[in-house]
Image (cartoon, rainbow, N blue to C red):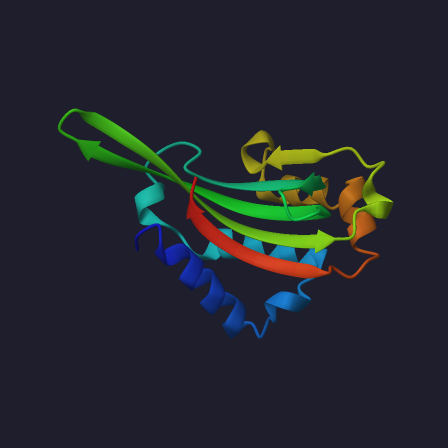
Amino acid sequence: MNPDDITKLFAAFLLRKGIVLEQVTPPQAIDLMVEFHSSVQCDWAARHPHSDMLLFQYGVYDWGHGENFELNVTRQLMHVYAEDVGETVVYFQLELTLFYKPDTYREIPDFNRWSMDCQSIAEFVNEMKKTDGYLRACCDVPRKVEMNGGLV
C-alpha cells in the first residue's frame, strides 16, 4: 500500500460499515478513525517511532470561506524515502472533519491532542470524549462532514 491508497481504503471501510459520510456524528468520527487506525496497518509507516499517529483537534476557524467550528480527527502517516544523498520524510494526513455553525462554540478554547501524548489509544479516546468542544458538538448536527487526504 502506498500513502495515496489510505484515503481510498478509508472510503471503502466506511462503505463496508454502511456509514454515510454526511451523517457522521462526533462519537462515530472518533470511533471510526480509531478502529481504522488499529485495523488497517501501513507497512511503509511501521518502521519509525510515531510514524502512524492520530490527532484530535477543534476550534473556530475561517479558512477564507466563512467561520466554522471544526471538529477534526486526523490520521497522520510518516513515510521515509531512502535516497542516495539521505532520507526524505513525507507526511500524509487522512482527515475527517465535522463543521458546525460557530456561534455557540466561540467561548470554547481551541484544543488539540496527539495520540502519542497519551499512554494508550484508550486513554486518548477517553480524553477526547471529555473535552468541551466534543461534548457540545454531540448536541448539534453538523452542517457538513468532509473526508480529505493528502500530503502535508
